[in-house]
Image (cartoon, rainbow, N blue to C red; front, side, top):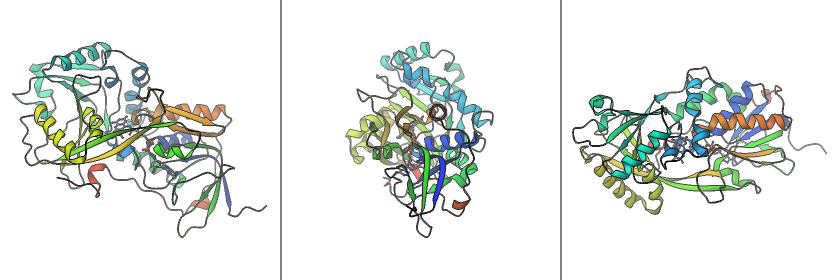
Length: 398
Ligand SMILES: Cc1cc2nc3c(=O)[nH]c(=O)nc-3n(C[C@H](O)[C@H](O)[C@H](O)COP(=O)(O)OP(=O)(O)OC[C@H]3O[C@@H](n4cnc5c(N)ncnc54)[C@H](O)[C@@H]3O)c2cc1C
C-alpha cells in the first residue's frame, strides 16, 4: 500500500530537546550518524532550564561520609565539560558561557555542619580545598562579612549558563532539529508522523529511536520512570551580592541550601535557591515556602538587607530511571525495548557520559555512521531555546 505521506528514512530519531537530546544529537552527528531530533515545545523547557548549572564532581554525593557509586561515576564530569568549553573535548562548547570555574561550600558553626565538611574533605582530597580565614578576600562576596563565623571550601565544580550551553549545542545542528505540533508519538511500526501548521505532513521512519523526553518518556508503556519533586525559590533584589555559587552544609547528607547567582533579562541580580530548601519545600505551598526561605536566609546570612528582596517559587519534577527505593540514581539511566531506547541523564553533568553510552549501545545494536539528506525539511520550523525560570512571565513575585 502506498504510504499516506512522503517518507523520510533516517537512522536515528531523538525525541526531546533538553540537555540529553541535544548533547546526543551533537555527538552522533559529529560522528557522521544520520540523526534528527524532534521537540514539541522549546529547547530546555522541561527540567534542563530549571537546572542550577552545577557540573557536579561528587562533593555533594560524599556528604554522608561515604563515596558511593554516584561519586565514582560523576568524578570525571567537571573535566569532561571543561574540555568541551575549551573546544578540546568531544563537542565544541566554546560558544557557551562558563559562569564560574569553581563553586564553594560553607559550614555554619553547628557541629553537624562542620562534621559533614570534615568527612567530605577526607573523601574528596584534591577537589575540595579549605580557604583559610586569613584569605577571606577569596570568599564569595556574600560571605565576606565580619559576622561570618563558618568555614569556606573551594570545590572543583564549574557552573555553566545552561541556556548558552543549549544554544551552543543546537546552533550547528539546526537543520536536524525539528519543531513538531504536539508530543511526538511513534506508530506501531515505529514511524513518526511529523506535523506543523502550514507544512506538508511527513512520515519519519527511523532505524533506531532514542527518547530523551524526561517525564515525557512515560508515553512508552515499557519504561519505568520515577519523578522526584522540588520546590525551587528565586530571590531578586539589589542587595544580593554576586557571584555566589555555593552549598551551605547542614546536618544531613544533602546541602541545607544551594545558591547560584544570575541576572534576569533586565540585569537585576537573582539568587536561585535549591538544595534541602527545595526538597523539604515540596510539602509547603508557595506562601509557606517563601516564609521558610526568608527565615533560612536570615539565619544563614543575617548581615544581608533582605527588606528589598522579592521571591518567586515554582515546583518541578526530576524525571529519572526508576530506583527500587525511589532514591537518587547513581548514574544515567537507559531502558531498551528492541531498537527504541528511553534514557535519562539523572544530572545535567552526566550528559556527556550518557551520550557516550548511548552511542556505544546503538553501535552494538548495528547502527553505523551514514549521512542523511535533510533537504526535504529545509523549510521546517525550528524550536527556540526556552527562557530561564527567573525570566518566566507566569511566576508571581512578592
Ligand atoms: C530544579 C532542578 C535543578 C537541577 N540542577 C542541576 C544542576 O545544577 N546540575 C546538574 O547536573 N543537574 C541538575 N538537575 C538535573 C538536570 O536538570 C536534569 O537531569 C536534566 O536537565 C534532564 O535533561 P533531559 O534532557 O533528560 O530532560 P528535559 O530537560 O526534561 O527535556 C525533555 C524535553 O523533551 C521534550 N518532550 C517531552 N515529550 C516529548 C514528546 N513526546 N515529543 C517531543 N518532545 C518531547 C520536552 O519539551 C523537553 O524539552 C536539576 C534538575 C532540576 C529539576
